[in-house]
Amino acid sequence: MTTYWLAPQVYDPGHDAIQEGARLLRDGELVAFPTETVYGLGADARNTQAVENIFTAKGRPSDNPLIVHIADMEMLDELAERVDPISMRLAEAFWPGPLTLVLPLRQGVLSPMVTAGLDTVAVRMPDHPVALSLIAASGCPVAAPSANRSGRPSPTLAKHVREDLDGRIAGLLDGGPTGVGLESTVAMADASGRVHVLRPGGITPEELARVSGCPVELAGEGGAAAAGTVTVNRVEDGLLERHPGQGQREDSFRPRAPGMKYTHYAPKGQLTVVKGADPLAVVQTIVQLLDQDRKAGARTAVLAPREHAPRYEGAADLILPCGSLEDVELAGRELFAALRRMDEEGIAVSYSEAFPEEGIGLAVMNRLLKAAGHRVLEV
Ligand code: TXA
Ligand code: MG
Image 1 (cartoon, rainbow, N blue to C red):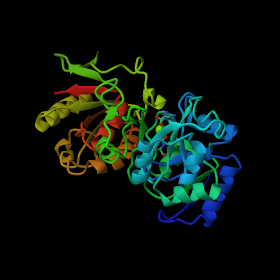
Image 2 (tube, rainbow, N blue to C red):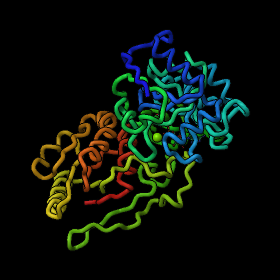
Image 3 (cartoon, rainbow, N blue to C red):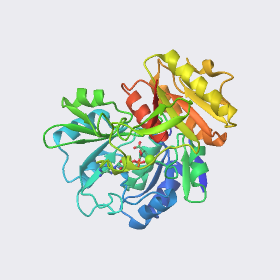
């Protein structure tokens, strides 16, 4: 693939790299580009062959629909049959930004591959100058999932895209590190005036409630982060055992964001999230488990907020500081790169401290739990 490096502040549809990317999109090719959340893998959403190529390049199941990216409100009118007043209020408040709205699809304007045959379409206007100028220059509605191989953590750097998709796509616009680091919030307003969060992300439920003035509901029992949780209990000999938790299991979970049912972000080794009200007990438990794992010959890692990371010195082969207790947004920016590091370093067993599930922490925990295959140890 050809990589075009661009200063992140470029907002110039006339720039050579943007023009080249736009030409490739119009020609039905795949182009990866930065957004404020994660890198996206773009294709002309009207071109079925191009959209099919996205699924092939990613190895993504074709029943998982894609988000369509737009650069202005006229494009929204072309895609959505109608935009209800609540969705309009949310779009006006948060676009461009990390919010995806699920709306009734205007028939015949997109390849049916984009929406996996649904009669709704997920739309967002990304808050990144390179993304906006690329979409505007192409003149296409741009279907773009995260630019990773299916199952891998979403890319927050151009090099992550190269690692996963080199040789599979035509171009990559490198705009440096992405901002939010987690994918957009996917939300849908229903006819009764409720807003459903189908996937937590960069815009928090609190923000959605404040702007819409509507009740906000999280998809899945106990919230999206808890859906499908498997509780891991310690047994006497100190080993870990899996027990089905209270949440609905992945196999029976019928999500409205079809992508939520798939395994995501999982490192090759086994990751367990350790949770508890007493931070000291969490650290002690993790240190004890790391000790057993190392004695068994496993290469180990621990992921923890900066304040706690030094406590694991000498206990794990790799310590991955991720955000801080004061700054959970930073954890969002650093999480995916940390998960990728585990594989780069050949980690067989890893533990992560849990993050507070407030604000953006809800999205951080949602991704972390998915990465752990919902393996949770409560202490
Ligand atoms: O931040 C993001 O949203 C990134 C960047 C590139 O924009 N994109 C992204 O796309 O995360 P993807 O394909 O990895 O995730 C799209 C999510 C999936 O969970 C999918 O099931 C859901 O949106 N989705 C798409 N269309 C939908 C629809 N019509 N109804 C409900 N959920 C939908
Ligand atoms: Mg994705």
